[in-house]
Length: 72
Figure 1 (tube, one colour):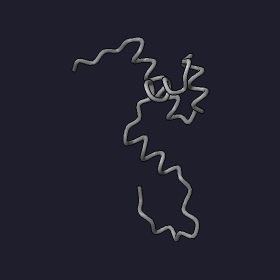
Figure 2: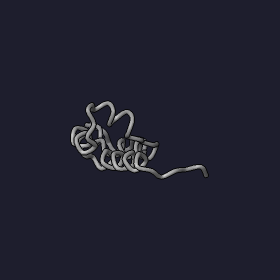
Figure 3: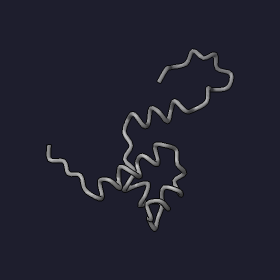
Figure 4: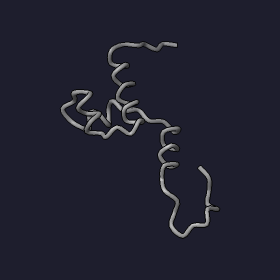
């Protein structure tokens, strides 16, 4: 399949798991020992559609809604 597991792929996975576990971004940056938050969040964090849907599901219900809104 042409996939390789190496040190950097483990780092990418570790940092992505931290972010998807709702660890604060600054904590993830410090654990990764990165100099900038943009390096941690833009280069080492990989989110997919499943992560985006999970984020939407964490939103509170809209005030005044009757619960008949669209399901995610």
